[in-house]
Length: 160
Image (cartoon, rainbow, N blue to C red):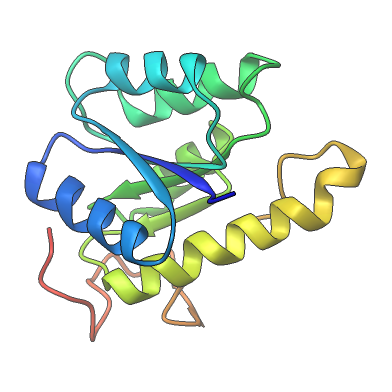
């Protein structure tokens, strides 16, 4: 059975690119253009991972993440936050909302797929103890991301 992913982003270009990349990797993908639609899908269907943009109409990705973590029916869904902000307080807010990973825009679609697979692998390893995932880390292309440097990560794609 294919793993299921939800991609929620109000930018149709990003939503379509991420959906396409995950589909090509064998995921069954659903998409939403705003926070309320994402939360409705998460409550109606079973997903292994949700990729949530922070800034969406109606409800932020952080609020969707909090709602997912508070609901026992969805609490085990792995959540990856996508955002243009790499400021330390924003990263902390993402993890504080319950995200398993935090991916800054612009990002490489290949790296994003690697991060999705890594989060799912951590979730699978920790499934026995009931934890949604292992302690997250912020990296870019395998290297630690400096939270004190808000500059864009060199080598990332031009996706914003």
